[in-house]
Image (cartoon, rainbow, N blue to C red; front, side, top):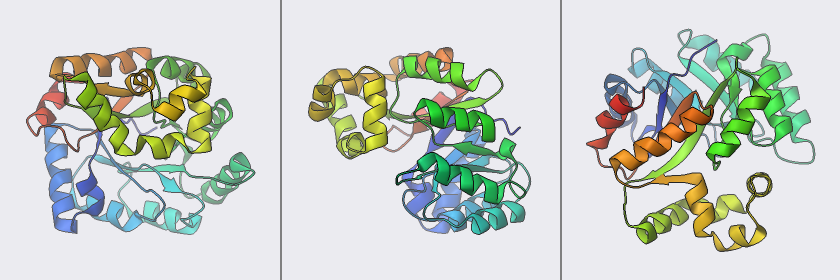
Length: 266
C-alpha cells in the first residue's frame, strides 16, 4: 500500500499556473519534505497536469483530490496510471452524483480494478457507507470539512490498516473575526449547500441554523486558524484522532510557514 506520509499539501499554483510554474512549486514542496501533493480535480479532468507534476519531480507522491468519476472516463485514469512511475500517482476518486452514488462509484472501481490496484487509490468519503466502500475497495478515505471527532469515528469504520487523509482549511490569523471571515470566504457556503456535505455536518452535530448562518461554532469546528504554534497544535488534534495525514491548503499562508510546517508535522 502506498503510504501517504504525515503531511500533504494543496496549492492553486499546482492546478492553475503554467506547467513550468506548477512544477517549480511542486519541486519546492518536495524538497521541503511534503510527502503528498494533492491536485484538486473539481469538475474537470486534471490528469494532464498530474502527469506533468509527477514527471517534473523525483519522489513526491501526487494525488488527485479528487477526480470526479462522472466526468473522467475510467479508461483515461487507467492509462495515466500505467504511464507513470510506480508509487507516484495516488488515484483519488469521488464526485459520484445522482440517485445511486455508491453504485456509480462501485461500477467505476470495477472498470479500473485490473489496472489500478486498490492500494494505490483513495476515495473522497464522508458518510458511513462511503467510508465502508473506501475501506473495502481502496487504500482509505480523504474527507473534507470535518472535525477531529469525525476523524475518530471514521478511523473506527476504516480500521487500523487503512489510510485516512484529511483536507483542512488553514488560516494564519489570530483575530477570531478575521479568521472566521476568511474561512467563510473560502467557498464554505457553497460547500455546506451541497447535500453530501450538509448531511455529514448534521451527522457531526451541527444544526440547520449552524449551516444557514455559517456559525462560529461550525467554522471553528471544521477549520484551523491562529498563530503557528496554535495551528500546529490543532493539526496534531487531527493526527491524534486517527488521521494518518493532514493536508494543508497553503494558499494564503506565509511562505516562511511552509518549511516550518514540514518540520513540525512528522
